[in-house]
Amino acid sequence: MRALPSGNPSLTGRQKAAVLCLALGAENAAKVTQRLSAEEAEVISLEIARMDRVDPEVAKNTLMEWIDLALASEAVSTGGVEYARLMLEKAYNTQKAQAILKRITSHLADTAGLQRLRHADPKQIAGMFRSEHPQTTALVIAHLATPQAAAVLKELDPIVAADVALRMARMEKVSPEMLELIERSLGSDSDLDFQRGMSSAGGPASVASILNLLQGALEKSILEKVAEQDFQLSEQIKNLMFVFEDLRGLDDRALQRLLRDVDTKTLATALKGASAELRQRITGQMSQRAAQALVEEMEMLGPTRMKDAEAAQATIVAQARALEEAGEIVLTGGGDDVVLG
Image 1 (cartoon, helix red, strand yellow):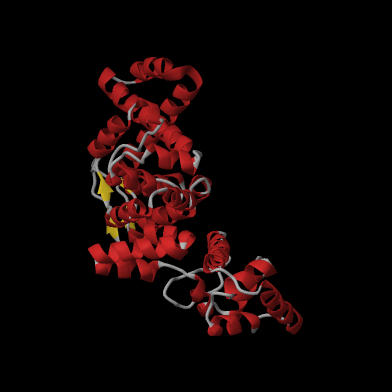
Image 2 (spheres, rainbow, N blue to C red):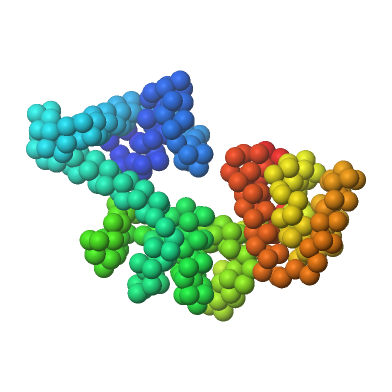
């Protein structure tokens, strides 16, 4: 536990959000956090838990800053940038008004740009970056949602995709200067815009999540490429992944919950490429009739191509991930135990 210093200290964005929640009170803070993602709410809650007390002056300054930004955002959205500028200059001196307006317009542009990118077709995104440096491609893909990032990697040349994944895994904080340089290199027609300030994206966990959705030959190729360059990083990614064989680690209730969402034919195809232990583990959670139907379906399929089995396995892993995101189960890679959420 710690106390924030008095006066007007330089707080991080997380700390300001935590101070704001404390200043608003539990009921109003709950209304704010309801609009956040689960990860964002967890981060803010952690910052609140770390605080012992907050100096009244710090709370006042943080609350006033939030009010200024909220009013400016509303002015921009309802009356335009010029209207917001006039309103702010009447309330504050010109320098402070310009600073607030710059932050608001930058935020609005960033949000719109990222939303446009996240709705783009993966083939179009891949085509856009075929002539770009892999580091540029890695930075952009790291800012996409996991399913879309995986889809873009599939569209790239396997060697390029492996290089991009390696760079994503090594990625840490990205400076605003680097983001601006990339935007200029892509040109004005790219319709891309990134958040200002130090941007955190990528990393081993991000790559592991993407590889969970790829699987098969491309997944193996990427992991081999990473291992050639950095064996420890490759092992770190593997330990963070949840693969089809890890279903053996689910407890009975979690596995039963997953099986309710899985189509019999998809499961039969996936089990064609699974270990005998996993087959036994899954059929053991079924009724005798359902297990018999599954066995018959597998027999009817006959010889199955490995890529078909891997595709079915990827589908089931994606379903497991969806259940985890919904808070119904919790998954960990490497065969660790999984508990029902």
